[in-house]
Image 1 (cartoon, rainbow, N blue to C red):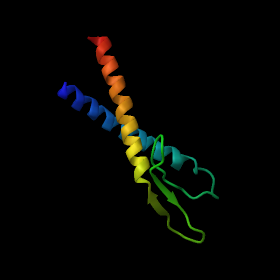
Image 2 (cartoon, rainbow, N blue to C red):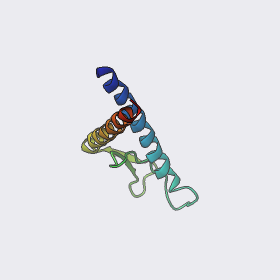
Image 3 (cartoon, rainbow, N blue to C red):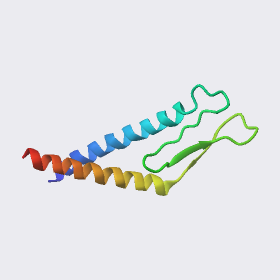
Image 4 (tube, one colour):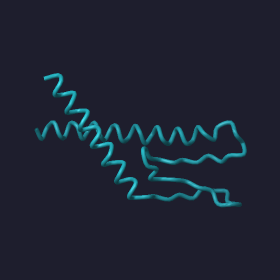
Length: 93
């Protein structure tokens, strides 16, 4: 049982990494092709836990973290991944 939990947690880590990467790419792609928009990297799904913003007249972006959203993202993705993993294992066995 412990081995299955570690395996499912590894899958949750992979899912968290992929979803975070996709959220960055989506936020960067929104500004492509529009010269009036500055590129902004926002990370997090379903909650944004890292964000960039530009101050008026600034040439470099500022950033911020919301640790509560980071923790919620980890818990949600880990829980959903565990449920999916154990349901699939139950159907296979």
